[in-house]
Amino acid sequence: MTQRLDARLDSNAPAALSVFRIFFGLLFLFEGLSKVFDWPQPYGVETGSWPIWYAGILELVLGTLITIGLFTRIAAFIACGQMAVAYFTQHIEKSFWPVVNGGELAVALCFGFLLLVFTGGGAYALDAARGKR
Image (cartoon, rainbow, N blue to C red; front, side, top):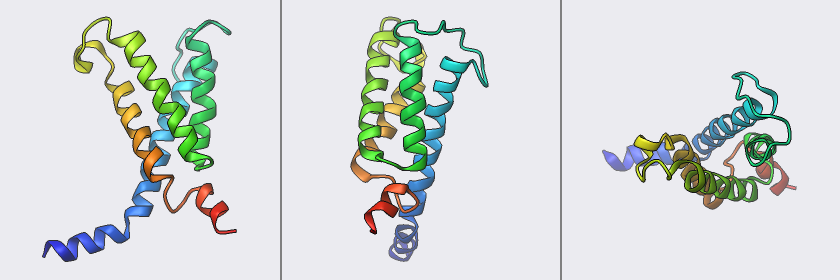
């Protein structure tokens, strides 16, 4: 029974990975939009202020690349590192535990991007289309 279920689910894994990548890429992209353009949620960061505004620029660029699946592994590697730095510089001062210090999103994004470093962007990524040439 479980072997048939595994086989059916395994055949959809590349598409599911693409959905995962798009979702995490959009989350990152919208974090950047909030920091740089105060849209859709005002973040209240002054243009050029260190480090938040520059983190927003990285989130815009990397979020876009991850969402469309272009250079997914390297973009996810940089994004993973950015989220680790964000957690250890902004959140851990309050508490070690993410649920206490508000760092759940940073931790989840960090490990989601780490997964993409090792798996790539999935079937519906520009990387997959580039590889077919």
